[in-house]
Image 1 (cartoon, one colour):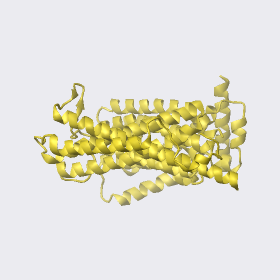
Image 2: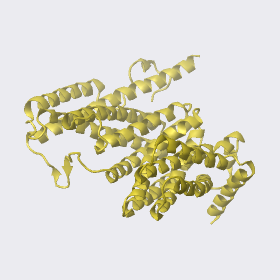
Image 3: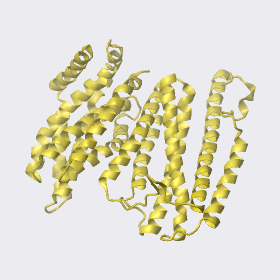
Image 4: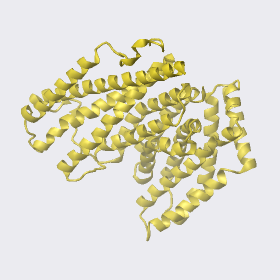
Length: 239
Length: 212
């Protein structure tokens, strides 16, 4: 990071190799393509018909949320291991994006449950219950983070709690599987995805679109957060 | 071996403090008894064994939460945390000693709570008692760790249940499963796995919680 008195502080600091406008344009194109494929190319599901199309977004958003939580834990680990103070902010932004996508999983899952099974909420649906647990867990992460003053202790506590999150995901998943009977459609089995052709293509496009969108949002938020930090330092220097 | 001597000394300190001040344990005992009475009136008639088993676990979890909330209060009030951190021992020993002391309180509370449950509601099986012991290990390991985190925040007592309950859900699943099914092996195994996994993580990362 440049010195606090740098005159270029007014622009959003660059945090990666690809420029932000290029990323934003790419995600716009990808999300539009994904929408077009979902509505016009992918065939209707034999059992659930048109409503099954929400699955392309539901599943790809869920995997994106997992990716965000994993990235957050990775940055948290880097912070604890290398004492890299920038990794703390990156970890926070990853978890924040994960929570946003996690909320979308709850919403899309709820809509799907209503159409497929006639109820807005089903305790027998693994993914939904898991995301509810994760939602509570990561909301507590924000409560924790915002009730500690900024500094190394806040970074440490947040990092340790974010690491707990990635352990909680498989443990909770196992627990939820143990606790219930199974009526959720399993998309991936040991023999690979049980679909093919245009369905697979559409799903892959939607997945890539969501990941690129998440990365764009991550870069945007991280850039503005860093600008914020820089501005505060500048103000301290001026005062 | 000096490590375990340190843990022993620290745990003895907590138990001695409790013996003299009697802050935590009477509160936990009274709380769990009151919760059972509330449950009786919340479920009128004769509730089934399945229902009361769930209530037993809610009572245990909340009673534990009461003890966990108090675990680091003496250190905060007497400002002894700095002294503990500066002591020439491994910092994870602080966590282990606190967990052992909290577990002692919890087990003492359950020695009253479980017979009381059997008296008020339904008799208990051996698997349930084993599940209680295994769940206690997980509750105290994770809860003490989060208790140390919570005292470092401004919100303090308010934040511990928020941090703890999402992490305790797998314990509840394993414990309730072990209490109600005919062959509880899988559920007990799951509890053992949870205890081991989280104990190792807490042990390895406690240093970062107390370090400035």
